[in-house]
Amino acid sequence: MARTVVVCKTQEELFEAAAQFLCEKVPVSSTSEASFSLALSGGSTPRGLFRLLATDPYRSQCPWSSCKIFWGDERCVPPDHSDSNFRMAKESLLDHVSIDPRHVFRMEGEREPEEAARRYEQVLSQQVQRGENNLPRFDMMLLGMGPDAHTASLFPGTPALQETQRAVVANWVEKLQTFRITLTPPVLNAAENVVFLVCGEDKAQAVQSVLEGPRTPERYPAQLVDPSSGHVTWMMDQAAANLLTKTVVTNWKSHKGR
Image (cartoon, rainbow, N blue to C red; front, side):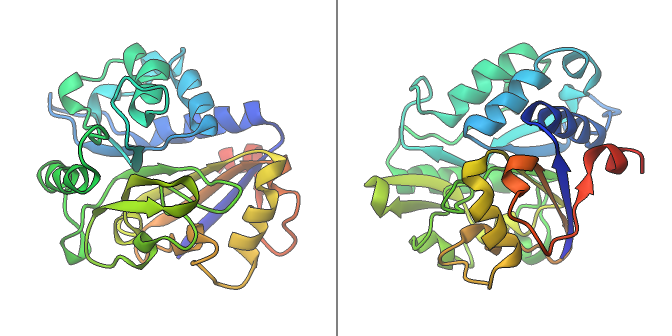
C-alpha cells in the first residue's frame, strides 16, 4: 500500500491543506460530461472542509463541473433530516458550487435499508468506472474516522467488516441500535485515491492504534483500508497525531512544496 501521512499544526491548516489537495486532483473536463467520481464523508470534520470549499478561491477555481458526487455512507433518515450526510454536504458545499444536480447521487436513507443498499449498488454500476474484480473504482474517496476507529459506517464488530463481494450493504450497528448504509471494504480498497481527514485529541488513540498497532480490523475498522493499487493519504492536525511514534509523517508545508 502506498501511504502518506500529512500532519498540520491546526484544524484550520488541515482544512486548507485538504481543500488544496482535493482541488488539485480534480481534472478540468474537456466535455460537458462529469467524469471525476468523488465520494464524500459525513461528520463534523468534513463539514469544516466543505464550508471552506464553498468559499473562494476553491468555489470558483475548483472544476466542480467535472465531478460526480457520491457518499461513503448514510444514516437511515430522509434527505431533509438533521442527521442526513446528504443534507450536511448539500447545505455546506453543494448548494454553493457549480455542480449539476444530475451529477449528485445520494444514498436513499429513507428507504428500507437493504433496498437502499441494493439501489445504490445499481447507481454505482451505472455511474462509476469499474476496476479490479469489476468493483466501482472511485477517483477519490474522502473518509473520516471516529474515536472508535470506524470509517464510513464500518463500525467495530459489525457484519459489513466481513463483506468481500458486495459494493454497498445495510450494516446493523448494535451500539447505535440502527442500520447504516455503507460502502464496503472491497470498494474502499478499489479507489484510486483515499483521503482520511482526522482532527482532534479524541482521535489520537485511534490514529495510533490504526497506524502503529497490531492489525486487528474487527476492533479498528480503518485498518481495512489497504488498497493494492491506490494511494492512501492521511491528513490530520497535530492533536490527532500526538501519539504517533513510529510513523513517518510529513509537515504539510514541506509536502506542498513537492
